[in-house]
Amino acid sequence: MLNLRFFSTHRPWEDWLGMLAGLLIALSPWFASQIDHRVIVANAFIVGVLVFFLAQLEYVVLQRWEEVAEAGLGIWLTISPYVFGYAGEGLLRYWHSSLGGVVILLAALKLWQDWELSDDDLARHGQ
Image (cartoon, rainbow, N blue to C red; front, top):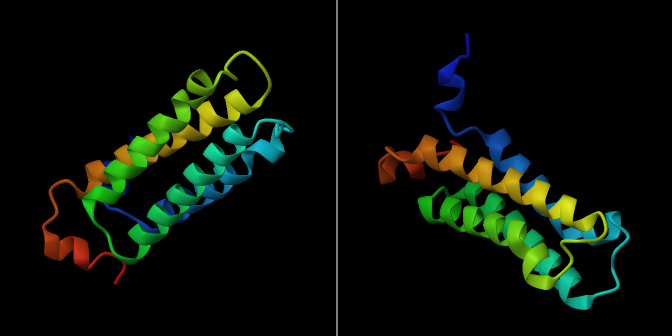
């Protein structure tokens, strides 16, 4: 049986996973060998840096808005191939769809874990 208590507490590894996802997002245009369009590269880099920064901020000072912002960035990254027109070609669309999904799921998990915590409980995160 699945241990639900494992998913009920915000753990530091979740923040580290968010930082890793941000790093992978920022580097994804070079992994996919599709760096011919500057707007796509800039979008991936900016989203990756923001995801990394928010995950790092959550590790230090946990607040709910950070998780909502991460979810928004994950949604943006997932729809970016359609907005910038690279949805029909190359591996970058798969990287961005997959990493965007990871960011969305991770943000939803952390938001669910922290939803009923008081501000004092959030402030004690990581101590």
